[in-house]
Length: 146
Image (cartoon, rainbow, N blue to C red; front, side, top):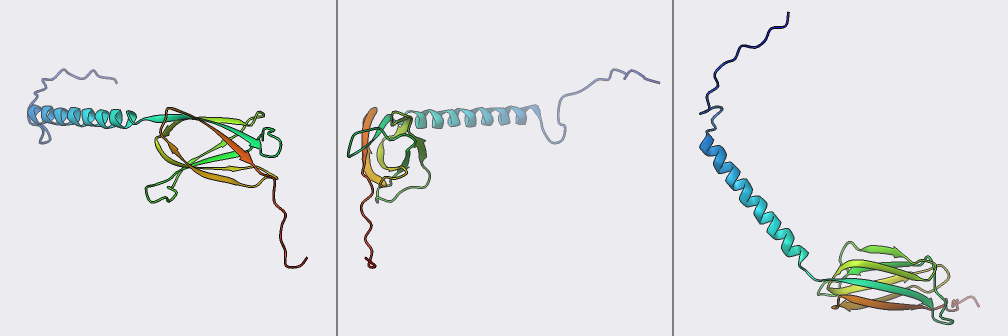
């Protein structure tokens, strides 16, 4: 019941409106597009970035704050926080680090249970930055009912 297909002659030419010449042109255009994309990625990759090291400590005794959230947000030229960002957690020594932050203004916030929230803008312009964040204990709450 199975029959072998008979060999037949195949001609290359105009088939479905494509010729070998138009396929060569398409391949050339595709090659140029790929090279342009590689150039764009290489240029973006050449932008300088920084390695950030954070140490989060209590301001009153200098002890490390473990499991604190360190939040990084890029800031635009108008001083407004850009969308996106990164969140890090400190280890038992109060340390966290991040590689690959592009140069420019960066808003750094730190949040830890039982301590005041910290926030400050930094200008990132060197390959390595070491930032010490000193977190304050909460201040007394004021109330009109006292």
